[in-house]
Length: 272
Ligand SMILES: C[S@@+](CC[C@H](N)C(=O)[O-])C[C@H]1O[C@@H](n2cnc3c(N)ncnc32)[C@H](O)[C@@H]1O
Image (tube, rainbow, N blue to C red; front, side, top):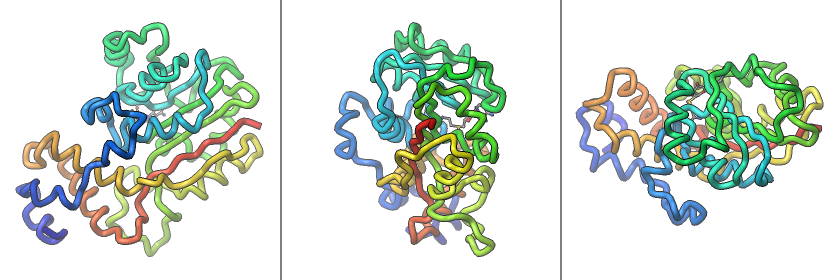
């Protein structure tokens, strides 16, 4: 099956023919997640990565028990609960679109009431004391609010001296140009940037030093697995129209991309 055949038949496609183009991430890549099933790794995920990406990000953050962590835009809170469960850190799950009451139920189900506090907030108007957090974590959400030139210096205010910020998720290998194929662009993709761009963004005003900023070793593979998990969960025929269009966009984007332009990355920076 090739892209032309998929487009011609969509949404009536044979998933068995699609699957070889969109392989699953092998669990052997993640021995640290051996206690989790694939369903648990993607439970509540609203973007590529799930706990695969969250665990890679967390491993780079020098977390230790009792630290105060702000998770910005955790959606259904899976990353916040993961950080609390695995590292025993105290997490504020600061989320805009998903209600804190729904997330509180999940926190209670996981027995993490003492470690995770769900809060409705806008990342541009943080209601916290300056210097309060030891770390800020944001996965697949930062493109919505962090690209503002002045955001890194704003965020730095809420970190203790030496505090860590870690962001991870969507990126392009290099910046968009007028020649970038239109297949790569839709909705939030206009706010994707390259790892180099993010590195400069965080260093620009001297509030952070970069400890790590690179494409993820499985950047494309995480994207491919995202399409795989979505169509495994629900055949495109049965998706609502918006989701069906999003999935088609991802399929077209990934099968057009012969140069690993579409990727994922992780940045870790320390407040100076
Ligand atoms: C694509 S979802 C990713 C959710 C989650 N991190 C995940 O990986 O499943 C983007 C998230 O960003 C959050 N978000 C967008 N703008 C925000 C803002 N200004 N303040 C806080 N959260 C925001 C949304 O509420 C949404 O949950």
